[in-house]
Image (cartoon, rainbow, N blue to C red; front, top):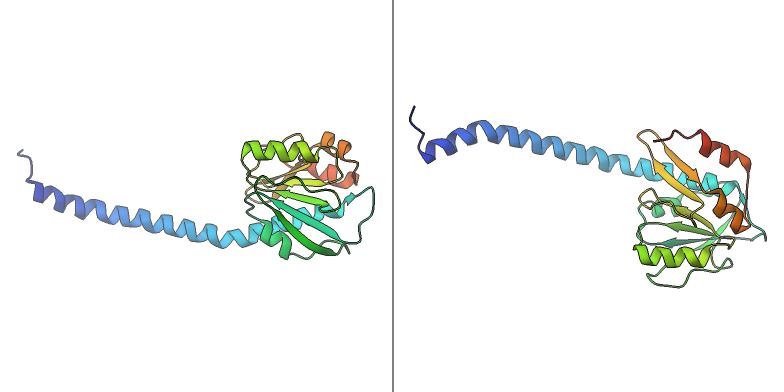
Length: 189
């Protein structure tokens, strides 16, 4: 059978491939729209879990107001800061740490919420907060390390977290055992 002319090949491709490509494009657009619609719900779930963790923590010295610092590119911080605090702990201010800035003092921040940060900057930040009474919580995109006390994990149906007992012990913070039990009950990968 002779090979069709280039024009005929283009017509055949257009007739068979164009509808398939359009269907794939529509399916991709539908998936992106579904993910975008799910993001606010996921952000609210992350905020609820973080405030739940905070409600189980006691600092060595009580603070009249809770100060939250944000480090790096955070995906869920807006929802966290907009959500009502669990319990009666009032918040006074939130501080976004500039890249390369010195780590906050316990008087400046009681909670450090960590997003995506360059490795060298994250190592420097961790070295400065180890042993301080600053509750360090990392977003799911951040690897759990020696200084992070709670590491959030996203599952299909829920937000869970891992606990770093060594970091908590070094910090001087007291965490209610219920928070530790919740972490142990979380499904493992």
